[in-house]
Image 1 (cartoon, helix red, strand yellow):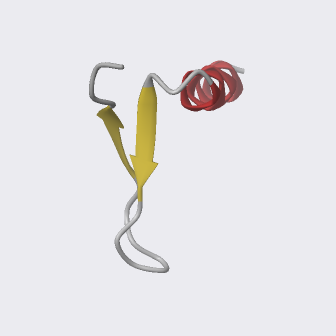
Image 2 (cartoon, rainbow, N blue to C red):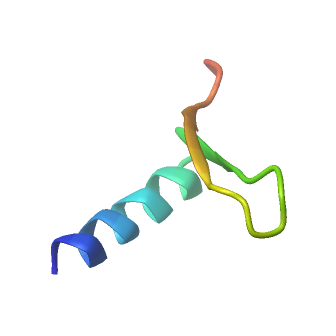
Length: 38
């Protein structure tokens, strides 16, 4: 259950443009980083 909650919270932060998800390669790691101030 904790993984699902974390995943949904991450999606919400992306939606609110507070973080961004970056994936350099097709099957590469996904990195989370804070977005620059708006």
